[in-house]
Length: 343
Image (cartoon, rainbow, N blue to C red):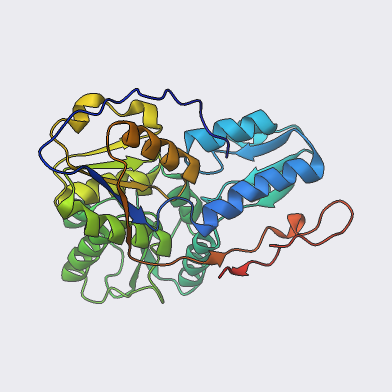
């Protein structure tokens, strides 16, 4: 991702009581699923040429979407906006079978960039529906991932938006219940929802593994460690990025005196830094590192040049590319075609 044009010296170095420093969360930024999806669009453009159409935002980040648009990607809300026979990429958040069928009906060449962890939840939904289980899907109504998962088994899924939804929830058979979740939620809030569901429905079954993405959990763990020691936490991420919004909430819940979410460093206000000695910095799972580095540059202008990494996990997973993009036009296999571990 390219750098933005930075206005050096926009933030002023105003003295505070004590030494200024930045606590920089690690891990932060791109997860394996986001990286796979963005690379998929880039390689589709290289392989097939512009334009390549993308249903919804490939990932929830303004800078990423704008950059891919400049490269020749065209973002649409639905596949009926894509010319017949064109190439279309499904976003990292996944789509329902109805969307897949609609693309096929228009003769579109579909490339599925759904995060494999979201695909796992889809498969669980299908399997539980075949067992005639009622599925309580913990997630946010209207979120693309929830719409995609719900579409896999619409007659078996009920969405639970928050712990407060549980009191009014009615089910067909409390003996045949299982819960699944959106992958980008707050771990704490999801577990509270599950706790309250289990109080009301003691026979509630768990999925075979935790649905919340490892990257979402890792980023929340890192900010939990930073927050008690931060006068201010700045989260880089877009407003429609569920995991970015959760990071700001988690920072406040775990002791940060103040927390803000920004798309770009240029949105940071001078008054946020009044009396601040320690700034915590992190970014959502759909945020390119260049945006964090621009924030660190601006903070350095304001006297926060001492950057200390707070490392709570190491991430080295790379997901395989969609099968259509594992070779170039000459049949040469891409170096990261099948994914794996990067050491």
